[in-house]
Length: 129
Image (tube, rainbow, N blue to C red):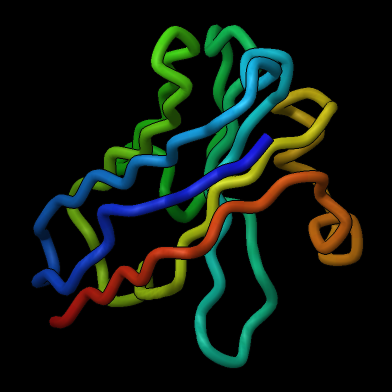
């Protein structure tokens, strides 16, 4: 599976952005998928994940109630709708796919995150106050 994320940008606090990840390959629908982010000087961290059918989702506490993850297997796309953005959301955002569950993706250690099967190129999100 090849992934590519886009849709980042520079916004003001309180604004919204939608990130999109496109996937190539017929097996996209077989994987749980997720968004991670990495701020300068910090480890890559989990943001949100969804199951291969898109029927369940997990969110980091820091984004719960503000971000919405969804997928469209017919279009091979993964979306992250980000609302009420905060300066602390500033990071490079990555989409990822792995042969596991959305719940497990949410619990990955930093070491396990580094070994995720498929990553998209990141997209920068900058939120100013």
